Image (cartoon, rainbow, N blue to C red; front, top):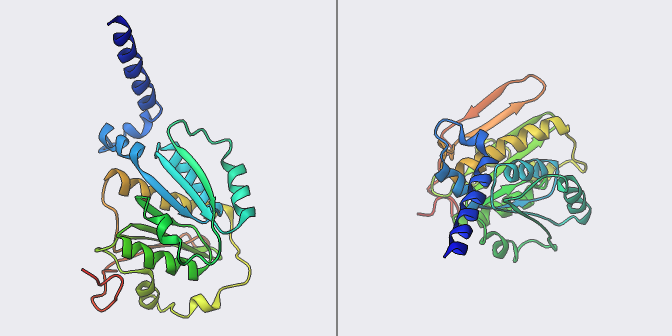
Length: 246
């Protein structure tokens, strides 16, 4: 009997210590222990292991998200991400890495189905669009980002509430952009940190239920001018086979 009491006491102490690690976010208005528990149970798949993805992974791990996987078709990218995140303390997060074999079509759906939220951290639009197709089909939220020079955009695609990335490209009159990708991706780590921070915040809101996730809004930021623009009304298109499905 005494051993059982000691065991329960240790368990309670361990839980209290775990919550103490997140006292700063637990002190936020509207953020409760229930929402923290949802983060502990949450799972996130990051497609790509770029600097943006590493920033997202670090932020999620430090917020206590339970399962985080970075998946990339680039071995060197994964190795860099592993080294970058090796010093991040993740006592409550299971952080893992997976090398994806090309072509992605075929096994991407099998990978994505096991996670609550998908994060788009890849550079190629072909991969972004494929991830959008699969996420819509599975009913999984996808937190998209794209950077071009010192301009970036973040879009939280929620099936049933948001248009898909293919419709978004048409809406923004960017449908030819995927065929015009630069051969070499260029950006600043400072800007990528901002992008990753915006994406991580959306993931935390989706998993915990904190606040309102945008769903039909696109956020654009110009790092040179400092201007922030929000485009609204990006609802599903009824004639689209992906986002228009009931």
